[in-house]
Amino acid sequence: MPTQALLPLLLLCVLLLQAQGGVRKRRSTKKEMQQTQLPREIKICEKPVNIHMCRRPCAYDKECQANNICCSTFCGNICMNIL
Image (cartoon, one colour):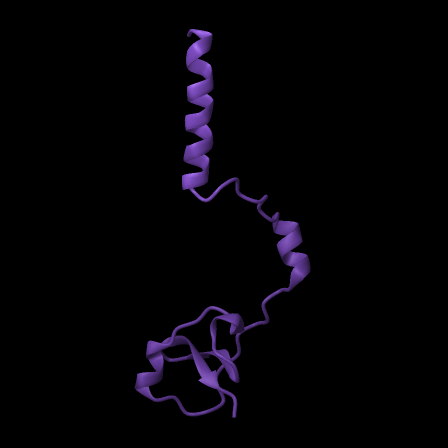
């Protein structure tokens, strides 16, 4: 490859990186993620559950809005108000 083509090729690579959102940050390792915060065990919901609540599925508390927790019901894990 001629040396004259290397500079435009390098410029093209830089432009493509910028179009994709730039250089990405390093991903966290499993150990770092576990040290930050472990999700708590999902418990059975203490309040009665209506069928319309099954439209709010979750896997852990952070997926729910404020004053809601993720708990287990007959239709899976759902977000339920704690008040």
